[in-house]
Image 1 (tube, rainbow, N blue to C red):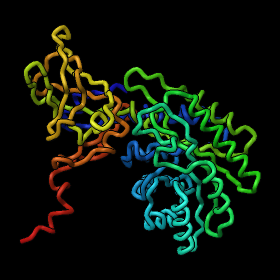
Image 2 (image 1 turned 180 degrees about the vertical axis):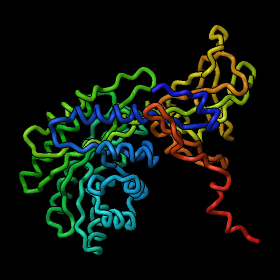
Image 3 (image 1 turned 180 degrees about the horizontal axis):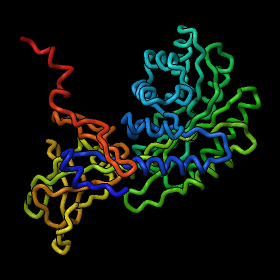
Image 4 (image 1 turned 45 degrees about the vertical axis):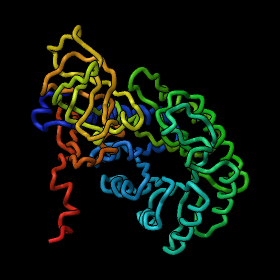
Length: 406
């Protein structure tokens, strides 16, 4: 749908997150269709955008949920995701989180270490609930992505190597309180090369075959997420090629494929709308200062990530464009949204639109410098609606105020 960003700015103010639910639905259905004819579960990666309405939207399309905290598990349940479609991952689950996940009756807990396996077994025994588990295998495959979002090498904190995984599966098979039903791998995010995915899938499917031979009945082949999207000039992997690579690696095995997309579904279906406050010239350096900041969108500061930025003013003369940094009000030199971007002159009140902000935007936002997080808007079927109110000062201090000394 065509979104009137200027009208939304008038009604809801800036900064403002805006999501195209029609585009999210389209991408979900394309991915689901790519696995047509196979047993599969698309489990939306909640960490990419955890707004309840976003999770609910995917749930209504049939999605499950990939969660990395008990908070995300509870968000998924609150949004209507069935417990049997929820996977709980993450390297540092507490006893309390494990117990709550088991009581919720989720599909499986994804184990990241031998120590965690023993912890889950102990908690499960204490509750008298058998724990359905998968084990995250680290196939030691280079995903060729940003080092901060690479997860499939031995130098990364995630998963266990193949031989350790085998020992863990044998132990779990013989435990009264562990039911090893799945295998999991996830080599990284923003993947744009099919070869590492093929290699990892083959390595892990070979593991599954060896486990089946000794009586470990794996039923779920969880390939994680990580499909890349276009921020600037990337060439993403066609979903059909992605699905074929995974399907071919498990040919002959009776497995349900689990896929955990996040960024792929939401990134390019979201924008962050901001407003120019001032321009500033420090010697030869030009700054455009806007009302959104690193607390609202952390990716540029954290990853040096590129986001396309557009000035929503048809009157601008691009012939007068000069290089500029777009920066926010946060008291940090790292508070920037773009560097050395060619921009026409701006004036206070001009709107800027930051593209590809639907994933790891609001979900990574904070109240740093006591700044309230933006409102969130969903646009669908030609209409836009509020799905999260803008945070007020009172919202931010609510949990502190009553502890002030008289």
